[in-house]
Length: 631
Ligand code: PRX
Image (cartoon, rainbow, N blue to C red; front, side, top):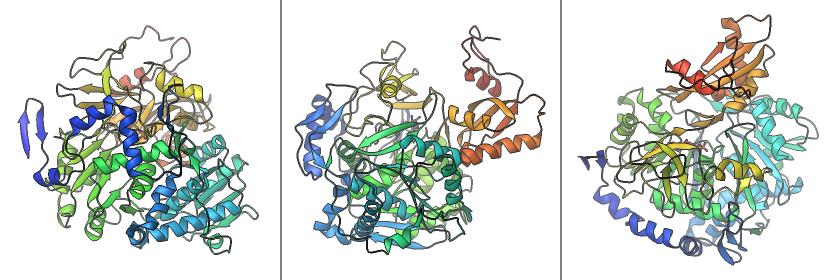
């Protein structure tokens, strides 16, 4: 149902949606949660999860912003994601349906998945992995990435997944920073009918960082790879050894023990290792998925993200399994070999909820309605969006063409740091295309000015979160000062995500974008500093600056400015070479769309590059105040 009120178009949920909703009264629940935040989460944690020992304190804010949740409790997220289902009928339920780009389909029941995880945990244990060790995982979208993550968590080891689209230097930096001793990777990955040479990239990265003792290699593409004797081991061979036993205990963890680190881009410098824990993250991710997508045992849930980003960690791996859901995972590109590949998957596997990014929607929109219309999409009852603001045009196409005007779109705003959905509708929430609506129950969000005062309706300001939540990051691994500085210092007591936003008269939040040096390309989060250091690692480039420029399809693209070594002349070939170099060091997503050679860069007197001036120049806009410009 749709109406045109003073706020523009509002879409109301159908009777069926309302009847099926897990949560009916958002306002009441939100008020209950805000009135007694600890009590609210205490109740949910008791009702929905299994603990080896209960907590003494639900929320300890005595050392804020180092908040602690479920203090003193013992659990393991894998106990809740796998082990506990073995005592129920769900042990024989399908946990994962995986489809390869080549059309191969594999399914795992909860029992099968648990056995695979147990065996791989035994292999890791035999290689000396113990509680607290870091393990880097670098793979494509294959079931073994899930197995590897869960096997680490089962042992109490901390996984650090590096997105399979990243390349040599990005991988090297993340392995080094985490001090991992094991790397789990694959020979290659399939993408658009081509192989991505993951093992070759890993070998090159490992030449630059010697700390890794063993590399475990999953065979996926079957391509020839170098296997370093004494260091590299095949996954399938290890899994066939007697050491790969299913007889292994799930480690008893403190609720506050680290579960994983995941690197993300920040304002300056190297990527930040965001740290999440077993207890709070488990409670937060599972509850948000259950409520926002009305998850039921009859669902086939498809989060189309890559497992190597937070979206995949939370909503491919942990939350669906904890909820005992059936999840779909697809290996390849949405349009390979035909533009209806995704719609074919929805039809064949009866997907009921699809969760993806606006950039994917826009990409599929380009092929027109005929492709989705050829397929039976009637199983879809809810849709989701994440990663960047969704433009109303894409929203409406998704709603009309894919959801057939019966599947509301849950536009979920959140971050690597938040662990779970923060600003999001529930299925019963009236929707406005382009707005992520309101805080999840218990999450108090606001839009404020420089002084921290709420801005008037429809004016832009800083997005802030005024309440703690269980799945919040606990720190930046190895750099607690940076944690305080990056998120809690601008407005003491409040979490600052780094986004700007507006709030309308109805209290709906409209996210505008990042206010820092983070660039979102196709929903992927990249930092200017990392791309710039990849640029200057090219022998002909001495200095570089990059800015994000709006793009209809990708949200933003990267525009790079480079100063060349004396004696080097700009040329089309050099431009291509520099782009390729960034692809090789950082990964294809970080490749600049444009490399422009310049003689100088605008800087402040203290030497800081004024990216604002560069961006204005690219966009043909006024450059604004130049009083701090050095030259
Ligand atoms: O700018 C916001 C944007 O993505 C950033 C977080 O990126 P990352 O940590 O990679 O996590 C992405 C997936 C959870 C945010 O600071 N963002 C995320 N979701 C939305 C969004 N912007 C607008 N609308 C959203 N729904």
